[in-house]
Image (tube, rainbow, N blue to C red; front, side, top):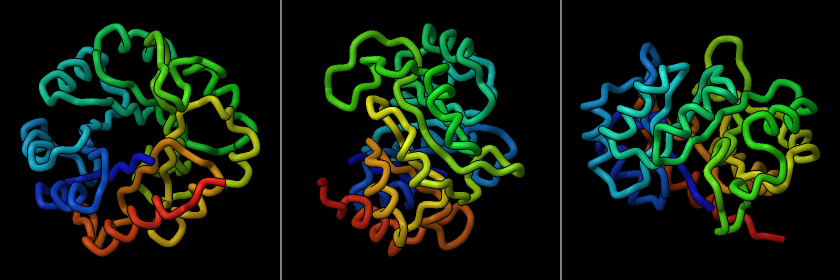
Length: 227
């Protein structure tokens, strides 16, 4: 299972994530956030570790996202705002990397229709296996906790058990929101995601990752046995 360490603000934390066994590195590129990085600083962070690169955007113009994705050689753009399915379709025509849409969970019962709007239940491109065909819609749906105060990064979890009962099983799912070394195993057991994504749950202070927590998180995420 892939593990993404997000909200990375320092090159040394990028190296820490790689040493601990992470597969993805996430940098916030949306302005005005606690962990926001400029393109130049993001480049230095990404260059510090040989991990796959995800840039986080919030309601940015599609042309700006495309330019930044190209400048930083991103492997994925993570859309964390109120971007519409039409926006996703337009962005898909511009970028060559993966496109992920964040869905902040409020009512689990709404998830099948919301996910369907962005991806379509049963879309073969979202299959968990290696055979992913045409590039339409999103490459993954990232489930995050909902908060009225921010679009993400606030450490709010959602009802994993309720979501597990309704989420389409042919969708490539990334789970975030309130994950910590202590609870990520339970989230993986219930949701069986393709990836887990953590930011504040492995920090010792905002923007500063804890070596102990990063190592513990990755070990716990991958310690769940398949049944």
